[in-house]
Image (tube, rainbow, N blue to C red; front, side, top):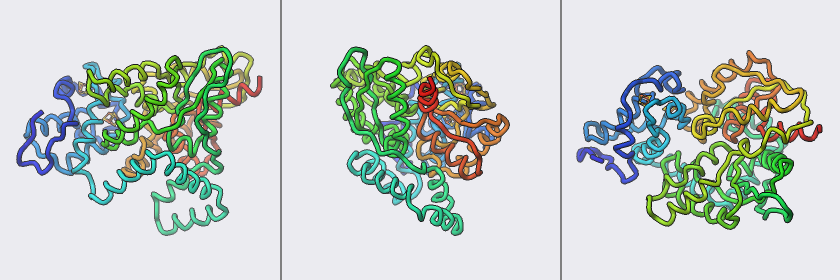
Length: 424
Ligand code: SF4
Ligand code: SF4
């Protein structure tokens, strides 16, 4: 991979592979599925444009400046383009590497260092994360919270107000690692993750009850999968977290690894991308990745026989389920198996909601525009609940509902199934 010697940003080893970039034939068929292109109508904010910039940088025709890196940074990593591309361009792998390559050129050094330190030393360290989670949960229940929310709005601290709107009111206490209960039946390992366990542990509890109803014995393991770090262009931190999680999953070598977070599931299915082919870690990553399944893949619709729930709901596809894992039908089939549930389809259900990890903090304008488009689509369906299957989307929809004063519940697929099963 070439680099321009006059560039102030040397090309690191973790740059996109030349053969991956070369697969793009510039046909443009991916453009109508790209949310950032749909919003901006700019070529440089499209998959084709971002790949062209990467090729120019690799060929030494363009220095890797902050402006170039900003186009890569504005990508949501939703991978709708990858699903639409007839040439099989592995866009997910390309953009992960572009994020790492462009990382030194992005934003102020201080902000970059702060973000990286937070991801590495808070999100990536279970003990520190537990402490941060405790503080957030205390804030979520604090009587002063409404006053603080008004104050944030009054001083136009929009990002803070937005974060506050996304915080659940009464987050359950996080789950702890536990072995599978004794007995007959296959074992499923549920990785608890990072932010999800601290803020949406109720979803894990619902997922465990549904998995048990489907005949699984569920073990839980602690630890972040590293997806947020990888998307932030920090493959070193992602690898460290992946190694730890691979080690924990290997303690139950025959178990299926089940994720109730689409982003974590996609990251774990692609763990081999983090390691050099032919190395021991590559083989271990391959073995673990082969056992990873999404929650909706391991709960057969027959589990819902006799269940009932009167609810008009829409299912909004998480990008990392629909595009990265190509799972669209299974969640819908599960919802359709519930007597009394009306499933309303909306236009653009598989277009990114603008959550995309910490994208809402880094690109608030684009993120707001995308969630506003979702709101308009969902409003037309007059639903009582928005159902999704990824913590980032869940919190983004929660923020939307709160900020607009909508009377719509936001539920994870597992919570809907759990409620329906309770009515059997
Ligand atoms: S990424 Fe795929 S769909 Fe998009 S322009 Fe390139 S070849 Fe065409
Ligand atoms: S990953 Fe999503 S936002 Fe990024 S280029 Fe592809 S379609 Fe556009």
